[in-house]
Amino acid sequence: MCIDKYTKNENAAKDTELKNLFDSIKKEEQKHYDSLDQLLNGTVPSVNSKNSAGKDYNPSATYVGNFKQDDKDSDAFLCTDAITTEKYVASAYNFDLFQFGDSDVRKLLNDIETEEQNHAEKIYKYKTVNQMTN
Image (cartoon, rainbow, N blue to C red; front, side, top):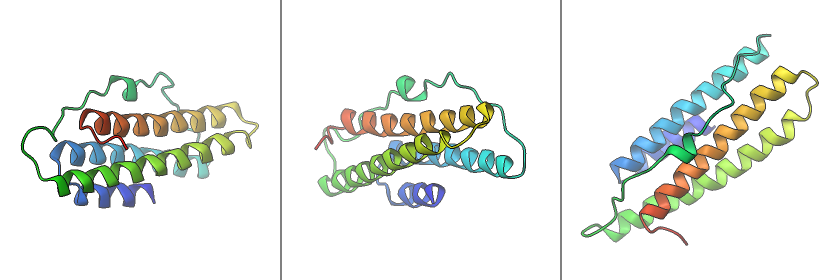
């Protein structure tokens, strides 16, 4: 569902920077899907728990100077909706990771949860730099 949502968001976004952000997140969601598929097939993929993608993301301001307000409003809505989705998905992973006795599975789910939080942080930074806070 997240992959489909970010595909649609990428296609609906007006700003190229936002399109690229949604595309990047979509690719990360595909990796999550692939990891969970491996898990369901009996293999626990290794993870990199030192993820600072959200902290390191510094988007450029697009909606400054001359722009269409309707485009900005539309992109702001997509961002707010995506952050809401990320909050829900991160909380689901947080809940699910406590259901497993295998520490490697918990580590995988915790890593995915952290990446979901990073997605929300990136989107929030995009909103902030473009003065879309509401």
